[in-house]
Image 1 (tube, rainbow, N blue to C red):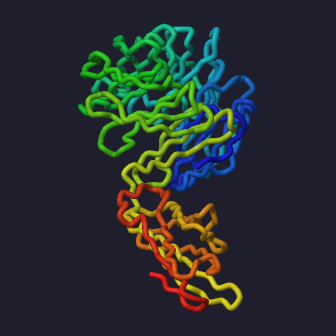
Image 2 (image 1 turned 135 degrees about the vertical axis):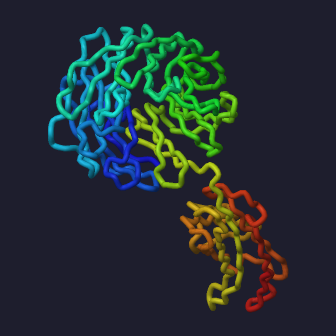
Image 3 (image 1 turned 180 degrees about the horizontal axis):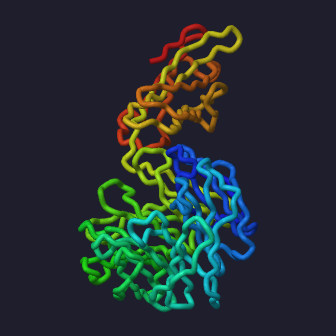
Length: 470
């Protein structure tokens, strides 16, 4: 489902900003330097943006995180980093922002702007989450406490030179949040946290060269979060062995030069899969975990223009993770609803009956679709094929070349919709049978039962007032 955004939507983060149980999105728009919340719906459609201007000192915005309550009022807030400034905008719980100024933190001046933003409670048993950001020009990740007031001074933690991406989670298996960074050479620095905000142990591990993005999750099914890296035509998994030790990376080749990465169990088999946005193409590719740390079976979601950022949430509440994609060049965001494992059996029925109008007798064809379930049917198309010289002339279906195309909207399990079209009797040759066949040509979600997708009816005109159809 495609929705309009502000100009140049580069970064997106999903969260329930109005607390209605449906995910919304926070989007950073680059040309007009605004932050927008767009409320979500169960169809995936996003509402008109509610925007605030970014601080003039935050130029340009380079990342967004919208998953924490920074000021302790119970509402999700949004953090943005750019140049040398981190800003937290406070949500009002209704899908907008409070009128109070954002909390700001000024970071040390660097040759290049800070990039990347993560949120975690590094100090356990405290209510205030912390923000982590970094600059590719040095070896440090900077931790900023976010208490809902102007941010206190940041503190640096050592990582690898020229870090490109960071992620936070417990990868050592000790219950404490750790920090992981990766650079383009595939060098990963793991700073093991102790739960007090300190990181007493630094360990390095490796991924393939030309790394771009990093995520942390259990890709091998052993209960430990692994180090997952997407790069130039690959996704790799460096398994965590516990106790801050790591195995050799497992590489899966792809056709994607990664711009962004998101993790979720997309096919509901209990294993963590990967969605990768491409730098070079207008696609998002979903790769399925094969159970051994490798990824294959790519499903390509066409975005028609390059994806600038992606995130994952469940918009329609069916328990399946969906994907939201921002398209900076097209000024839109697209929510791809996950239909994995969703099926709706479409049964097609065709009825033909003559209508003896005094001046224009015809045969009326009624095409009906019944949804045998088990899931709701989003849409269906049934195409009726007509033998020469018959042509459809009127009704609720669209006439085509020797065809009538009938479109159907959403149908609940067990329900039926009907459409009709007509064919004039003058087109029939007396005494010859003519067979019209109706078949399902498209439907969403998947129909796994082709046995009831097609049906036919034959009619023979024996005279001006005598026509038989069966």
